[in-house]
Image (tube, rainbow, N blue to C red; front, top):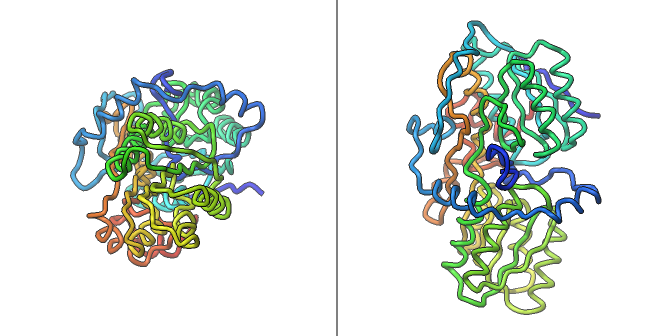
Length: 401
């Protein structure tokens, strides 16, 4: 049964640069249908302009309050929200793609703890949430339900997919109520703001450059990908593949569905063919399984990129392998509610709210392991909720509202 919660307490190079975000660890979007897969095959995911934009944004010092990256922004065009200024606590309606994987669960917990703060401050009266469970059709119905219900003061939307959700988001915009899109994007600029980390190309550049620096020309890299057709994931690989090709790295890629058994089989088969010097992943799910495949084969550990999921950080530390943990800033789940606060106060906010996105390096692993001691393996180190009520117990106990 689909869960319904009431919490009281450019497409590549396309329109408006509202590309998908948040899949970093969010690869459990429903697999595309045969028709959809056929359509995706025709998509050219590499976009030089967007690649260059995100490459440059990696070097930008974000603006905003120090120590609060969820309120920082990069190269923002600030817009006026005075038309939405209004007093009193407001009802937020949240159409969520899913909480079907650890990245989304970590964000969902953080979002609800941020909600608690804003409820106590009299900013938000309640947040009614509908969980689409990774279904486009369900999320379209959820958004239309909110529109028909008619008592939403603001729409918060984390789209399940980009193109399919665009008309529903536009219908929400047509109500005249503010719309905030985050994590993944849509092909319209009608939302008041679109909130996301730098993006998939930045992830791909960070990870590929790291592997290239650590490896030699001709070395073998196995790329473990979650699934096709999700643009932020496709952009990660498009960027990495370009750089591997230019550097003479022998890279082969496989879709795994984040299945540990499939990951182990892929690695075992590749090791049977010869040495594998590097592992590249477009999300951290299954990173430990990949490392265990090398252990099972008695092979030297690879140079590897995973993610800031605690299971990978712990395995990285235990093995001493050469690694990097790219990050798709999980703290972004706080930002939509804080954006709502600013919108109803009539404050300026970024039209495209690009949040900082920086990997965890070998020099920082101990710091993040210590800071997240006691957190479960599915927790994300850069979740950014340390100042929220319930820390650390709510995240340790994995209390899913």
